[in-house]
Image (cartoon, rainbow, N blue to C red; front, side):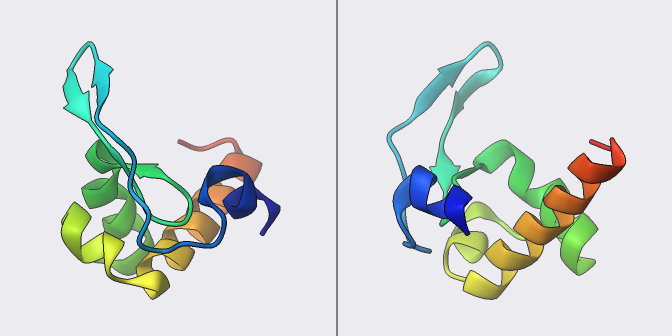
Length: 79
């Protein structure tokens, strides 16, 4: 995917430094740099169960499933 090359190459185990947000500090995880605060709900949508950021980071399959699910949601105008 071209998106993953822009985000972090093709590294499923990538992480970035903390990002300060109004709601606190967060971090992006994995090949598609998914924000940690999104991981539990997005993995539940894509996989039927909530993963922690650690579990997500160590599961290339979960990362791909979340990416594909979110891509479909964007096409359908869902969040």
